[in-house]
Length: 184
Image (tube, rainbow, N blue to C red; front, side):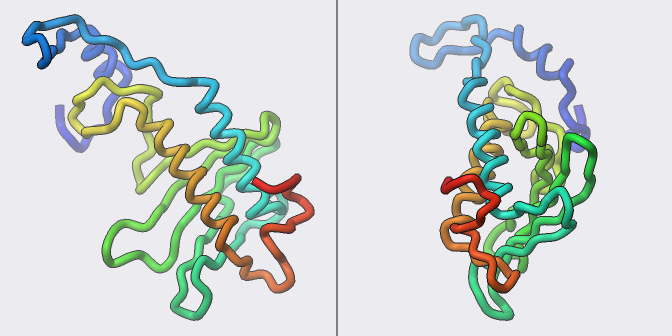
């Protein structure tokens, strides 16, 4: 399989029945499937929705929001841009500007579900296909819980924005936003 082609569900399922090697005992054994914490994952997605609503309370009306992490003209900022809007969902592009010289800056697309009050990462660093669980090792060296880790990272990043971020809008304080529904 080419490394440029995204993994398909069939690729992942075909590896789930392969035998694995137990280095401790030196024996081959049937591979154990990864079981992720669905309740914890959904709780993280629900918290991410709340954090996004604190940062961008007018996401259903406005198309852009800028949060300053480091003030000044050359300071770091997080830009939230609405990419698509539907009756029950909003897709938001989160980008950190300027790009960092020492590593990649976060660039992710987030799907917000307004009816269930949940938000999840649907694309990260221009990769847009993430499965719920991966067999390990795999060709792209993704973690078994890659999707959960991306949503945890989003939660930590949004919490950072809430803790030290300043709105580019004058007179708007993120921590005391009346639309936020409380502190996160």
